[in-house]
Length: 112
Image (cartoon, rainbow, N blue to C red):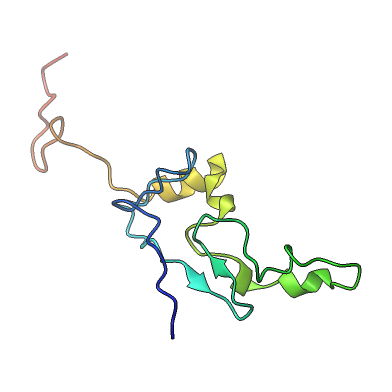
C-alpha cells in the first residue's frame, strides 16, 4: 500500500518557508514529496523521519548512505531558499506589465 503524501504547496508557493521562492508563473512545476528507497519522505518539509539514517546514526554508519539524488527534492530543498537560487527561479517569471505596457504602442510616449 502506497502512503498518501500531504501536499506542501499553495498556488506554487511554500508559505511555511519564509525565504522559499515563488514558482508561480515560472514554468517550473513544484514537485510533490516522494518516498526514497530507505522509506524516508523527501520534500515534505518535515526534516526528521524514523527511517532516516540521521535518526539512527551510529559509529558504524557510513555517511555515503545519504549521498545521491534520492535525498534531494527537486523543488522543496533548502538550497532553493538561498538568495541566489530564489533569484534564479523568480527570474523565469514573465514580468507583470499591466497596466504600464501595451504590446504594440508606446503608451509612455510624450508623458514625461
